[in-house]
Length: 219
Ligand SMILES: [Zn+2]
Image 1 (spheres, helix red, strand yellow):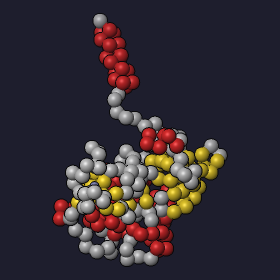
Image 2 (cartoon, helix red, strand yellow):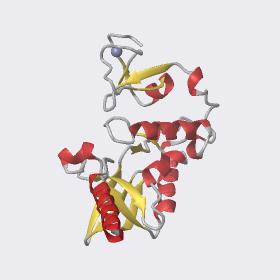
Image 3 (spheres, rainbow, N blue to C red):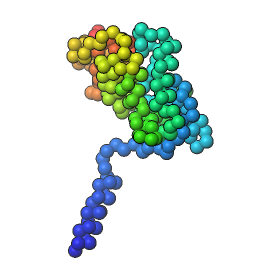
Image 4 (cartoon, rainbow, N blue to C red):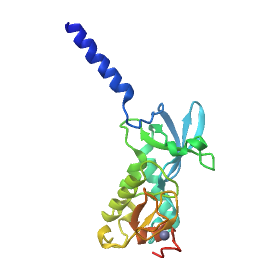
């Protein structure tokens, strides 16, 4: 009788494990970091081959810091990634939004969520959290909303490259505009071109990211 109970519990546990509804992304093996290319790209050795990895949802463009030289910003951002990944191994997770292109971008770089092998630190998020890049919203990805929030928090708390930026205004005081993930047009709230999953951000941020105003709702 006792064994029957244990068996039943075990069966239920197994069933729960295999039918778990959570969208699980399978992590890869751990790979050696060969070299940092810039703040959002590096080279990893995958099965003996050097592969260029582009971090999903993070951008470290020259325009991110209005008061600093282009070159200076680039160096700081890539130094930060070096510091995070020096002598480390990493593992990857992929985003199903990129499965159609086999997780490659048009430059043949592999698009990945990168995790540090030693402590599973989520590298993409860490860059935004510490203020060494901003959320790259041109293409949709699972963590888009989370990444925008991390960037906003870093700016408000003047972390990293935002340290000597102008005093930020809190989000509620700012004029918000709306956009569809993957599209660089911003709209007034309620515009008919906005989809159900549209997101908002302060207008300053939209302009800084090079978004265009919608010609219909004229935000
Ligand atoms: Zn519009």
